[in-house]
Length: 82
Image (tube, rainbow, N blue to C red):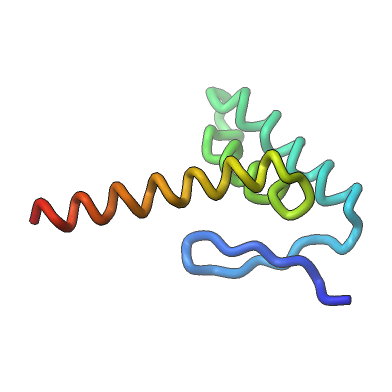
């Protein structure tokens, strides 16, 4: 069995093999992002948590795909205006 990986920002990051650990990590990142006003934690943790959860949860996978499609359309529209 291959190790789960996610890609964001042009980089690939390996995730833990344990499904429970991946889900716990994703939820912890989202909860940490909710309190993003604190100095160490940040709002950047919410999308990262959704990316981690998208490996195992179909709901998070759909959210990620919608965000990717939205971003690509936005980039194409921006290039068309230039």
